[in-house]
Image (cartoon, rainbow, N blue to C red; front, side):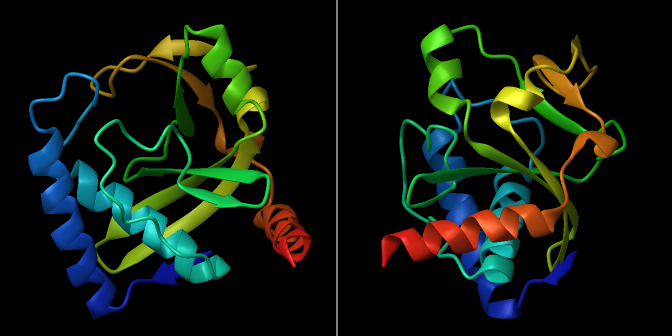
Length: 171
């Protein structure tokens, strides 16, 4: 599903990305793999938010977002944005059992970054299901990752239904 990012949102993304970069540039806990890491990530999140009628989280979080970009009722969503989805979705291995259990029901969404004004929402998978896929080191792509092939991602209409149900539960 292709989503076009309006110019005003592009400006907002650029401002927040620059601020996040400045806040985290010396933080060893953040794995910044490219110079435009924050722009790409925020563009994916904003594209997802625009498509599904959610509010993007633009708050500064010095300790990160804990792997939750959106929360609708009990539904937690973590958007994974990449400009190179050829290998599929890369999900960092978690070595902490408590953290793994906390994330197991989180919906992971793969978004392909095409340009500052275009993203493609590809598919999604539950965190616990993503962790059943093999883990390997992908050269130049950070630490050990579970590699979820594109064919292993669920259709977006199923996630949309879960989002709608979560919204109804709030009323």
